Image (cartoon, rainbow, N blue to C red; front, side, top):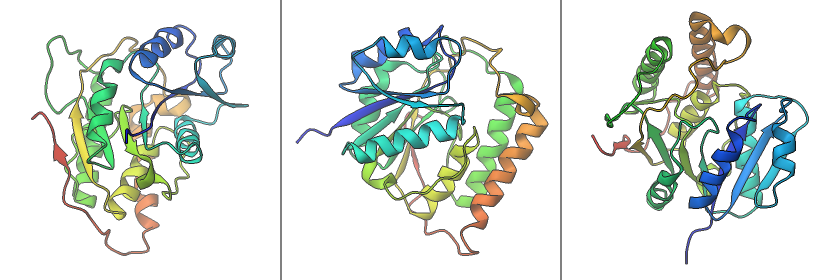
Length: 247
């Protein structure tokens, strides 16, 4: 029996990218969901005009983490087997979606990594983003016993049954850190898949004070500490450390 998969795109004010991103996703996915996180730039009108997608709309902007949680809920309630998430800003190549779906047949979480290996034409990431990613990824590995190379890549595939009961509260960009703590606690099987480094818009904002690198790092550490604190002092029940594909 073929697994039923869904590709979800969290979207906020992506009028310039959303049409191309959706057309690309639909070329490699049977079903596509857009979570419109309170867009105010005309994105919502573009989405409302389409009849080839599923659409969940937040009445106001709640944050990246909240949008991904809505995608989780939609996949669980819709009875899907695999949920793929990709960003809408052109960073992720939709032709890789089938590869992520295939890997999810053996792993609970398939996580894209921009640093697992280099591809011809890879772009250099903004220095502060790469530095913070390296620092937080190293802290996750040390504190959770993981072997990740990219803590923040939004290109992922999840086996829906594995995430059905994972509870997440973080609304913002730090949500992946909370997720990694929950995934490690539950012993989920994790694999990384190498993806190219593509940056089409280096001026994109994290929003408010998070555009300051040191404040962003402090927020990430605070969310990580809080998530670890909910484990009630117990050591996580770890699965074997994640495999890294394509090293």
